[in-house]
Image 1: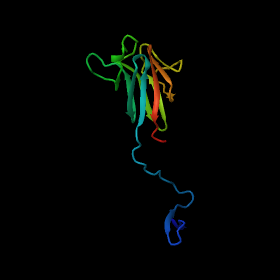
Image 2: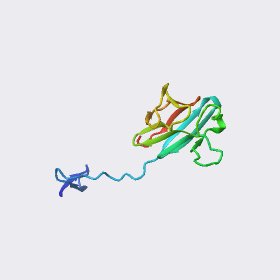
Image 3: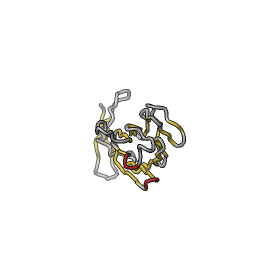
Length: 148
């Protein structure tokens, strides 16, 4: 590896910088853990705004009577059962620089901005998009992007 001396603007201050020869492989710098996305799920019909930090995945749905496989966000208090929301209705996934939604083969389907989602297929979600779970509309607010 070659060494290059670089002046930093001060007359007496120099730093040594390692320079890799051309064609050598580079390793990506370790940035540490990124901060989570902060997402708000707005249920206008109930006048409720649920704000949560998301680092990987979360499921929106209803708690089962037995309490098994509890969704991360339980929509039961918002008449979700009457609105046709399944127990495990939609998966919200954050990956890289984006947020994605996938219908979990729910009984009544998921609609994103007027388009029905195919089950188990991820669709990008953007700030102020509307998801409809069964007949329950939810506006998505992307409050913090970890890469911004």
